[in-house]
Image (cartoon, rainbow, N blue to C red):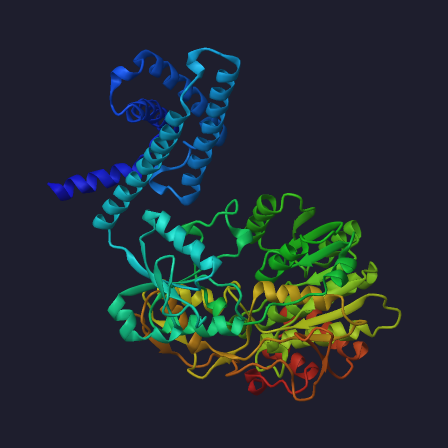
Length: 632
């Protein structure tokens, strides 16, 4: 019976709250009756010692003054069950202001001999000020504590440790405490400051990181670890996050201050740590002035604009003072979503979204002729290794043919800059996709060296981007959500990774470096084992690798490398002013040599066999050998 009553009561608390008008009525009623009590206290409960009708009239006057300041300072507007120090402070300010006015009224009444109604004994005003302030604050605290008691007795809360006991940690702690629906119960802080370790902050113990052992976690029944410190290096953060993830804890991160709602942090804004957070990469510093000058009042064409890289380039471009964006993609549904995103999140964005295939020369010529883009970011390409291995015609037609058409139109319509997105798979390629991108690199270099060309051609080369369409991260997440198994080609396979925003920021930076003809290589950090990514994703999902989710090795796919490279053995690395961008010094590509071979395939591409298409790429790309080489 008691348990049922508690459950019903907490449901009422959760689903309903006192309306503001009712809180105001309760507060004013408290003001009225505490004033009468103040009279009784002043006269030792001898009611015959003062005029009761006069006391009631003065009580109504006091209520009027308090009511005015309650309206002005909104002391009745807070949610009672979530009362904070700020709420009690507003009550104190409201009551103090009312007291000051009433004392002033009393002094004026005595000086100018006004009606006895305005001549309220100051001692009574002071007694009333104390009693009403205590009453209003006690009422709010009682409701809050009663709700906390009910909540704790009817719900199973997760025990939490907060990393960082500084300002951010204290804010997170107060948010956790004030929102009783969060389902969290704070057990303490973790802090690297030895001066705080072993002490208490806001009533909670501060531990050193050394206590984070399996025994401690089990003993204290810790389930959640909240990261609430910003003044820490990415490397250190990566180290801490990896450690607690391996302990099987749910890990949450606190967003940056500028992402808080109206400057206030809310529980729902604490986000689960993503695998991207475990890269531990230093933040990118861009030459914003150079980029701004390069993009200012320019018409910019982005091909493949609805793809992972293309759409992020568009998002990055919205920060600058361009003239117009021309966004081209053949995929209807992703273009639809991009259009909605630009309308919702970037309402001031000036753009034209066009459905079009970069291999349709007539369509692309129409776009160039109409908009006359000065800057071209060419991101349209097929990128999936197994699919392209099985479809060499399409890899060549789209990747090479599309690059040929867009680069030649850039020259024809005198674009200032052409930036092509390449891949680390173009280095010492072992598959059709990588070979097609290497042909694109050679073609762009050759275009840069054509006589009379004013367009500056730039190639950017980087590895895998986390979370891109069809990449390993979304695939693993899907497999985990379905209960496994997570499939990996080889336990030793490694890849370079960076986030999509990182890659696109560097694309913009590299786009305005050099004099044209360069291949810019991005610093991808250390290669990461795909197996490590899989195990971390499983743990971030609150599961255990090999126990809850099986990991299955399926063998390398056709054309797939065990590891990727950013430079080939015959390429020299040259530095730039940005430590995260280098230049690959490669042998000059001869336009007159490679163009006939490219045209020969494109003119009659579907009359050629797959091996014939691949053979042409082998002739263009030094060192490329395909499985098709043995096929007649």
